[in-house]
Image 1 (cartoon, rainbow, N blue to C red):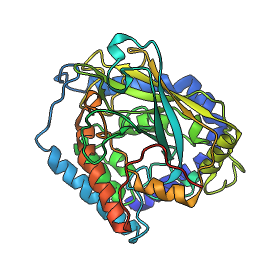
Image 2 (image 1 turned 60 degrees about the vertical axis):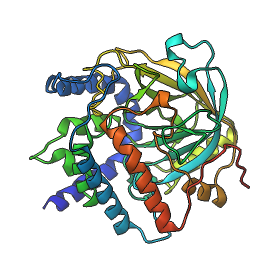
Image 3 (image 1 turned 45 degrees about the vertical axis):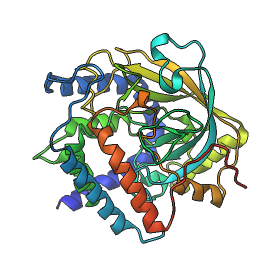
Image 4 (image 1 turned 90 degrees about the vertical axis):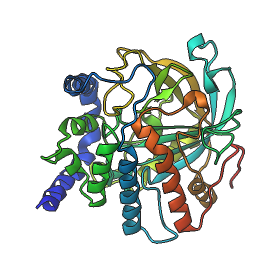
Length: 391
């Protein structure tokens, strides 16, 4: 019965995605942020106020058990979906494009922001990967309206918190403003339902309902048109030097095409990649990286990923610009190179150490899942220099 209801819901979502672009921009402009703040308030009024101080963490005793469950469920899901040689990432699965870029720290930053890679005005070569959520490689219109942008800086000096890469700093982000689960304990339940192809029942399960989290995700899920047209959010916190916590986001600065061909009929399977390629044939595209600093340990929690750090309380601080030059990125060699790369927020300098239980889990989760995938495919991990060239 649950599977039948899930299929009905999925059919409704597939239908809605084709009409979403015609009404969502106007709807979002009017109601999305007010509704986000309202449901975020309802989450906060039911939360415990016993939270760690600013930029501090609190480790739950069952975190390793939850992480073991998440890894086992994800590996099992990959084993069901793929055969050796064809394994994809368990999350952020379909690569729309891996593009070269330059990450430039802005001049004149406030003194308290000049930490880590933002300490001095300089530029870093970078690779940027745009992808969908997964865990399947589906036609773009059939996947949920959720995208990711992963940025890997190269030539970053100093010690790193993981020793499998020595000169990189990774920033990962998605198009929703809060994390889908509050913590790793609940994330393990989400992976249980996702492996059974019924992820929505994690949110709607009457025994453990997460309806407000579902609404928060739905408010920010929409049919995407071009990876270069979206704002992307870290959702989880990081250090900004000792004693300061931040979340970050990437904001598009360049007007690009947002037309989805053939809607409300079925568009091409890879229209997001096609629109990305068309935009980068015409010229460069830029994003601005902005930070939000933690000012209130309850309203901007470290250990609860599904709570909004409201930008009205902590305004955005522009810190860097990402410039993606005009380029062609669709060669088989470049896509093969993308499969060798791994992103992990623990590829970082100590000044940007990931914070919170979801981020603590990512260290082992991302490492083990990437090596599992690459092992099944006979591929090897590569640390890029940012200077790679492809025909």
